[in-house]
View 1 (tube, helix red, strand yellow):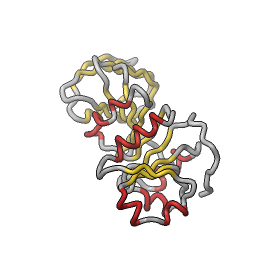
View 2 (tube, helix red, strand yellow):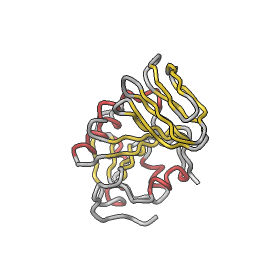
View 3 (cartoon, one colour):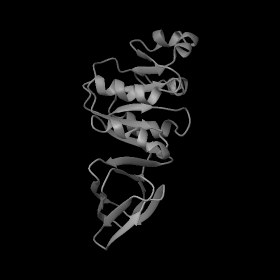
Length: 205
């Protein structure tokens, strides 16, 4: 894959690759099409670089940087963000906010930890991916979206009520961790009294 050593205009969502597991190159390809700013953590860095991908930011401990001194030269120009152990997510999101980015795709992120992302939603549009699903937030408690006939997942606080309206019917349901629904093709509206996340199947082909 070719390098991208030009100035990013930050109009496309940045890409944060947060782990070495839960994804493969086929998951990355559609997210790389617009040459986003790419952040990797020390957990994902070596796997990402094994695909020949040029990264812009490496979020890592001092130990990782000392153990991998070749990365500064091989990935030049690359920015290192030094963190204590296990603070890569918050450090990455804070960097994106402070550097003027407005959106980020995170691959992967555990839906159980959706609350970790919510403090950053006032500054960033965040989408995350997990087990073949793409999750996006209803920041104001409402989403209206045209969907094909498919399975969707609704993620929020345990017991939180969400109303679903379609051309077929309207019903109210509580969220139980990940609530799965089958929807028919058409315009779907979901609303609640606070933030929740909607997950749709993510095509990698």
